[in-house]
Structures are given as structure tokens and as C-alpha cells.
Image (cartoon, rainbow, N blue to C red; front, side, top):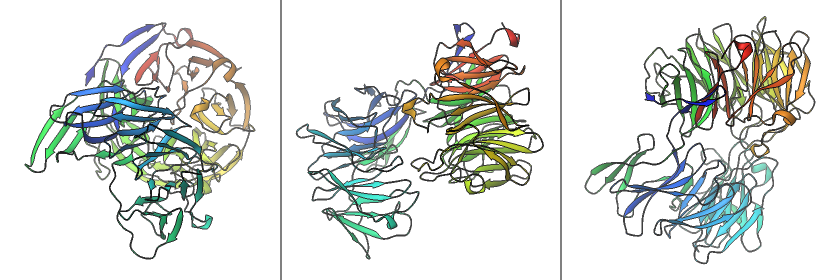
Length: 636
């Protein structure tokens, strides 16, 4: 348990500190520096995005940080490459970057089209190629001359594309995979800049990326799916594709990969056995002597990004972090934190009875934690783990956005967006008594809609706020979001309507003290760069199934946070409805429902939000904050 002193920020605000001061790696390689010493290079990731590259001496554990030479913009690498010339490359926040471990310095930076490199390769001339999300931008860098060319987007689709493999044949053609709505293989000719799809439309596979690799014969081999399913392989060479019947040659080795890249082997023959960013521990082994050395390294960190907070059954404040994925709890009485490793990314959370539940990405996991029992190392196959994995819902639900701990005390309902490349998310009903589930697909509900918000209504009814979002890399097909009512016994829709024309999602709803439902509606399809400003505060009367009040919040109150688990509305024990905006907290007036500022916040409110002992808890980046209202709540 970590103790820390809460800071008084005045005007009712407290800063309770960083949940966990741990970073994660976004690509790690073993290589050598200018003195011939074995070193480890790792892109660091914390709540700021990628602030620096970490270099660790593999003999002593001494570490140095090299700040990236451009603003991270909250972004981090999704692909990295260690070249044959011993340079380390990546691309993020629309910048291509080269680091030279011999010079211990960044030696090239180029601004490019948006936004982040998803795949990289080195061709036979030693040039570095990158293809970027979301629109298949192509770029090339020549380390020998310093020449850089940004070709811009070369392949158009109406969904955001993922390009996990980029390879070159010995003729100089570049090939890259595309996913996720539909697979494709693109052949790119560097002189003309012309991109040509290799797969006929009928051969494209839904919901998966294509797979590619370069073989030792100088040719490229690809398949329309991710390499694990059925389908013909193709030989790709000199811009042409030939379908194969026989065996496929093995891939030529290259130190290149996704954000999970972990290259263990040093030129000296030694290797990394393990590297733990939480413990700050590095184990180096010598296969020749069978000896291993444990080293301790260090780095600076702003802490992991907090996804959201909710009150736990034991009267503490629960929080979930991303990169690394951990659960935390803050103890107000002792002003201390504890944390532990989690299954995945904790998007949604809340308490029912004496249990704390979480909806987690990936795989749409539902997790249960009993704070009265000791923590037990979490394993998916462990029935007595604490926290305990109850079920997985992928691909029907992959990213949970809504979690309802039903007032019946025994039912948990979860919804969200589907798996990568899919359109339409479903609903999970979990029965705690029998530990059984019913999982509805979008075709059982509203076709091509996902579930963004949930409210329990009287007489066993459920109010659902839909959204038009697709799964990551998926195609948006629904035109506008709807509200609908589900009978929990029959699991059938009884009523649905697009009550507010043009709304793309009903991002959050909460039951108020007057039997009315208070909610937030968004007009824009989800896009982080738009800051999600076009929002509407509304009040829905479930008795007559009508919107009885609405107010455009953007002109006065600005934007709200973009977390996958919303928690933008907090209802106090006395029935006050609070809304959490980035720049402050507002409340809805009784009867008229009109919003008014309660207080401006000294920090940006990045995630919500729950009420405990007279305080509203929320987060900014890696910090937990709270605010104590005046007046109507009988406080201060």
C-alpha cells in the first residue's frame, strides 16, 4: 500500500495523487551502443503518451531517457523497427522518427500526414517504409542520404484502416496488409506512387486483416486473412499476384513489429530473459554459460492513464488504468493507494452489493472483485481468483461502454462496441445467482447499432441508448442512434425511436430522483480530433417515452471527456444531478432541468465520476481528484 499526502487545491478541490507511477513499453529491442556495450531500447508510455525513449545498460542497469523531439499529443508507437544499420525507428503523432544508439540521439524527425504508423519494413536498399492508420498513408526514409518522401494516403475506404504488415520484394515493390472491415493486400510502386489492390472484392475476408511476409527468395507471400484461417496463399512479386497451391516459404527475419515488439537477442549472444516495468527489473541471461543477472533500472513517469472511477463496496474509490492495465483503490481515511495487475483495460465499473464489477477491453470481459477477500493472482482459468473473470463476449462485445448493476441485486447488464472490423454491438445479461449468461447480438436488438448507455426502469424494463459506432476498424452503417426499451424477461425490444434527429449516440444516461432519465446525446461520429464538442443534455420521461427537456451544452460548457466508460453524470444522495465537463462541474435545476455552473475546475476533467462522503471523485490524466459542493448538499 502506497501512502501519499493529498494536496488542497482550494475552492473545495483536492488532488489525491497518482494512482500508479508506472509506465509501459511500446516496443523494446536489444542492441549495441557506440562503445560496443549491450543496451536495451524501449519506447516509454504513460499518461502523456510517449514522452521518451529509454536506454538501459545491459551490464549495469544504468538508464538514460531521451525525450522525443516533438509533442507526443498523447500518442505512442504502434510499430517499431530496428534496422540492419542499428537505427531504431517509429512513427506516431504524425511524425517519423529515427534514434541512433551509437550517437545516443534522435537523428531524424519528419512531420507527415496523420496519424500513426501501423506497419514498417526495411527494403533491400536499407530504406525504411511506413504505412499509417487511418487512411493508408505511405512514406519512405533513406538513412544513407537523409531523403524523406511522404506519398500521402494511397488507398481509400470509408472506415479506418489497420496495416499491420508492410514488406518489400527484391524488385523494390512495397506490399501492405489492410484490415479490419475487409481484408486487402496493396501493391505499391515507389517511382510512380501508384497503389494497386491485389485481391478481388470477392476474395476479401470480413473482420480480419490480411497477412504478409517476405521470404528468403526475395518474394512476398500473403493470405487474405490473418494467417490462421482457410484461404489461398499468393506469391506477390514485381507488382503481380499469383495464387499458390504448394507450401509457402518461411519468413525472413526482421526486427520489426507492433507495440508489443520485444526483441531479446543482443549482438554479443546474450539475451533478455524478462523485463518488468512495474518492478523496474531486467533479467539478462548468457545462453553459453547459463548464467543470469538481475538488474534494476529506473525511469521517470507521470503514471498510467486512469480510465474511470467508481465507489467500491468497502468505501474506497476504485480506479482502472490503461498501459499498464491495473486496478487500483484509493483509501480516503488513510490517504493511501493499492494496486494490482488486471485482466485487461477496465472501461466500465460499479458496485452491486458486496462486489465490484468491471467491463474490460479486449474480449468484452466481465470481471468481479470481492474486496473482503485477499487478492489472488488473476488467471483466466482460475475459478477462485480475486478479481475473477466471469465471462468473455468478444466479438459481440469487445469494448464495454455501459455497465448496469441492476437494482434487483442479482443481474449485471453490459453493452458496448463489437470486435475489430465488426459492426453492431450486443447486450450481456449475467445472472449472479446461477452464474449463467444471455448474450444478445445486434441482430437481436437494433441491427448495426451498439450499446452506449443503460438505465433500469420499473417493472423489469431496461432503457438502452444506442450508438452508431462500429468496432475498431469497422464500417459505420447506421444513420442515427435510438433509444429503446427491452423487456428483461423476454429479452425483446418493446419500443424504439430516434427521438432526437441526427444523434450518433446516447453516450450516457442516469436515473434521476424524480423518475426521469438524465442523459447526454452526441451528434458526431466518434473522432478524438474533434474533441466531441457537439453534445446535447436531455431529460427523458420513460412514462410517456418523450424528451421533456434538452439543452445544447457546447456554447457555454464546452466539451466533455472521451472515455470508453462514460460516468459523466453523477447523482448525489440528495438527488442533485451533476454533469462533469472538461472545464468544470454543472448541475441541473429541479423542475426546469436547466443547467448552471457549480464550479470551474483547476484541472481538466478527463474521466468520471462518483460520489463518496460528500465529494465528487474524478480524474485528470493519471491523478485522482475530488470536489466538495457547497450549499444544497449540506457541505462546507
